[in-house]
Image 1 (cartoon, rainbow, N blue to C red):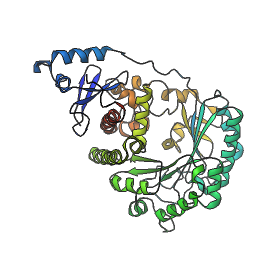
Image 2 (tube, rainbow, N blue to C red):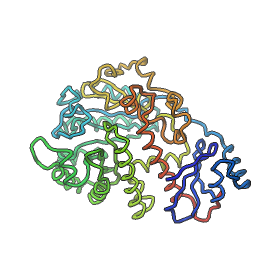
Image 3 (tube, helix red, strand yellow):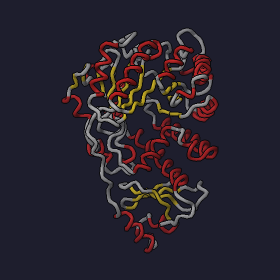
Image 4 (cartoon, rainbow, N blue to C red):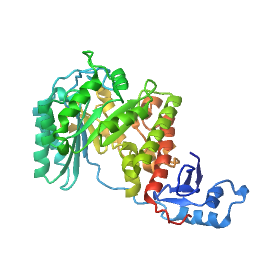
Length: 437
């Protein structure tokens, strides 16, 4: 993918696109997407190349137009939580981010419901009617405590209805423990189900072995059978895979997820993999999956891939993103002891704890808040900044030792994927008869 920049405009060459031999252009500040002519594309080269003056004038006019959309000024309230229902697990995944065994170094079989419900109320009370409160139930493996899942879900449904709030409730599970009674809890409480698995039987069993020697893939298939009768009451069924040096077969994973009837697929790069070469292989594989999806089903199929759905939404809204995930600003993580962190990967590290119960430390939260683009020096001149939002603070710190000093491997991956997402967005959204700049 060839990209060139002229002032506030990025041009992305798309030789594979059927609509035009030209290029897609993206305005860095107002997030507009358009097609440009071949003459305009050539004008992105140095002035010594004698660019087409008419095309150059049009580019300059567009670059100076709508210099910056207004940034969101929503108050910094916590509207999204992840909650560890347990900190134990029945699998032994090779890349486990929870201390290698689902415990984060501190096994907890059951979260205290007596402590959790008041903690949830504390956050609910800060929201205005009409807002959405998002809660993801996590572990360990949360379905090792299905009664806790039920009690928390029922409480959230009742409280959000009384407060006229919208509830987005989900559970991230390894998918091996969904029995008929569990399926009823999930469906009755309209809990979206996100199943962690890494592809077909060979891939999943290799990366996600059970502690008993059973096939985790076979157990997931059994769980999906139990979900069939209540599928219409499950808002979303998603599959989430982690890929790195030991597994880069995203195409097989995509085919498997499709066959299993998922609504959405998320392909995540292993957060502990430092290799630029492996990252580039992952990026190439994901772009191949995107091409397959687009060929088969256009925008609908492409947006089943979580990354592309996110970028399409941001381009539709034309609202610059200045904080990658809201960590410590709109999002918090609660462990099974009701201790508060800004990120799931921080659990088990007392020095990164920002609160306990309903007691939050503003001094510990402050470094995570504000505009990440301004805090991360390398982000200010990056052309994807308003679609990326400054990148993952955990990955930055993991690679560089500083959450505001960017990980170049992550950034290269983001730019490549966002380039392709913008090109697909043009293909899906801009009418074929529209004029080029």
